[in-house]
Image: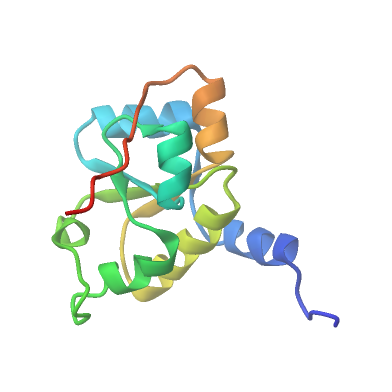
Length: 135
């Protein structure tokens, strides 16, 4: 099977149309108080590696549903009016996700170039995420 556009082409096209921030700039925006950092990774990645301190978790598969106020799955955090900075492990999923929500009309948005890997390599703060017990 041949695809018309590969992942690298899709990511490059997204990055040409969105804001990419460094980990340090994302941290500064978070500290400024008007930016929400959003972790798009699978919950198992969070359990295994932790997350950016203070980040909100929105699994990639639910993001558009959580952003859309007309969706039965809408989350109020996405109606806060601040800037949203998305990240994944390396910046590929977050580039595509940022483009998708930007196309939906969510503004302002950006993603962290290099993702969680870049954040950790910069020595910025993370926090542990423990699995929740099922009742």
